[in-house]
Length: 368
Image 1 (cartoon, rainbow, N blue to C red):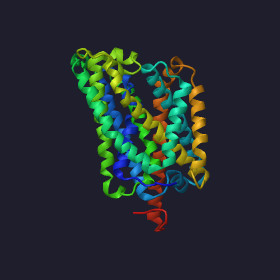
Image 2 (cartoon, one colour):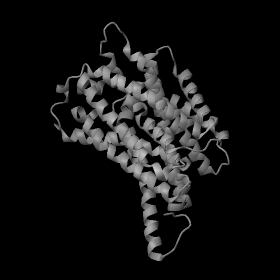
Image 3 (tube, helix red, strand yellow):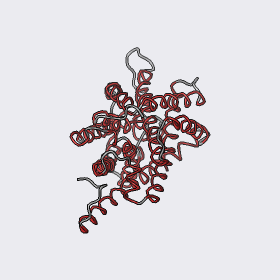
Image 4 (cartoon, rainbow, N blue to C red):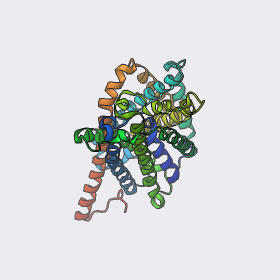
């Protein structure tokens, strides 16, 4: 594959956009009510641990893919089984991301259909994968300033209608807060585990790994601010009812003679939603290549894309069927799947190091 390198800066941009993804327009931790912003802060600790785990594993095996690392740490067949489970989770995630993005685009542009949108999005993503990792990193690098501009603009618009009384009382129900924190930990924070597939391509990870933490917490701050502003504009009750709370909050604000202000933010929804589809689709391709020991990725790009389109079209028949399942199951599935995969490999790595230290055996796979 050509263009197979990334800078830490580009990787951080990809992680930041993957973290935002479709969650910037949806309502993570909405079940926490007025304490959704606190739930985000607590849930972000899971993402922080996942970044630590990814970096720790990758520094122990420089240049190795997580699929190969899992086979080294857990054994060939056990490692393959765990990797296969993670790949299946990625397939499920891409189908959901496509579903969410298409629902939002059809809300804004009702004349578009799923049978046009989903193949078009997948074909565009396939072209990016075909061009290579470096191109995807550059695309993310270019997209970040645009995304930040639209996010700050949306926050500025809705802040004019904010009523902080909606945020009181604070910590009124710890059970809702705990449920919201678990929900936020699974989605969006745990889904950054997909970035582990791109770490082997980063050329300056040792010197600039702090950038990854910085951009992660920029994303966390954006989610905190977003949760506070949306709650202050439309209230906790409407947050639970609204399919896209940020979109609803912008629509509720009147700006002089301007109408349908939310249409100016279509690029925000499209770019952030598309990047997370692209990153997860690319991760599937990389994982399959290493699992099947394929020499190149290009022969499987379009077949996998076709399969993703089919399962996303027929997995759920309507938004009414999809939304209750997604809100109740998806975040917990992301949390368990992503957290378990990296944690078990990290634990095996540390156990292997301890055994190696006691026996005095120096393995060629472990690096200081």
